Image (cartoon, rainbow, N blue to C red; front, side, top):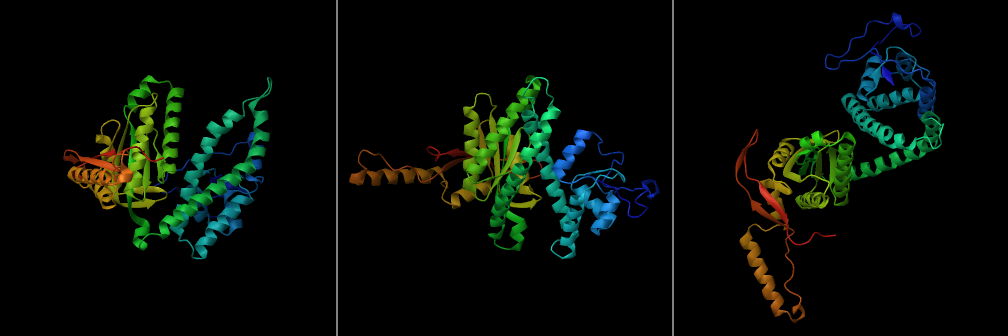
Length: 396
């Protein structure tokens, strides 16, 4: 898929098009050409469901969209420019009509439509790269001597394509439903964009040293295991995995208790795996700006800084996070409060005939917190981190 910036000219003679000028903020390679490899063309036709028919200018004109807007849509989706090569299909025309139609109907502003194109393009590009690099590469190993991978690829894609498409749409709808539910529960319109929740970074300690010691394949396996374990734990306990960064994951949760549980479970899981380095986690609670699936703001920066100063196999949280735990009854305001509460529980258990031999009831608090040293944090002033710990055994 490609684009070209020209807005007029004879579609049958690309050389007659005016010179192309890219945006000063977006350098474009106009030397890219679509492949003419026969198998690649067959696979492209199979996946897209149509043959090449249009140049970029013809596609934009057929869709009733200006070449300038079509170019911005295509670039936002991550498609390279190919001049005026005939490489586009009916699906490309339909996509242009749909996006432009949303703008014309007033359902999306033009900048928002560009954001939709960019977020969709970035997400699906990563998914497609993973599926080809890790998924299809393994499945297309020739099953018999003498067969080539090329001979296996086409029928395999033909079988998998409809199933993967249906699964992708299903997962997207489930994620969209969950995200919509979170947004509509916001208190007001402003909170729908700038919301208060917990943000945490989990970082593998000494990863740079590992990269010098491990072979590339071993390093890849370690990163994949870390990302898989992290994603599973975050999802299972009610959080959201915002993104993975190789040796680090960024997650979010609507309340401090959920984020604290996720952080401690991550540390515990990595500690049980002898092949994994130590883990450190930093969490902050506060207002967070969300854009295109990512999170920004002072709260995110603070969580990152806390991670960088956290001890091995430990979780550091900020004062706002600690206050949330105390407010919600997940942690005591002080050790004195917990000691008094434990003594009261023991007294009540001793007076209760049914409690004989069973010991005092467990602590009502899920977490304990220890204030750490105050220290300046670059760009954020002086902060007082709290060391988060678990009270009792984790819930199943």
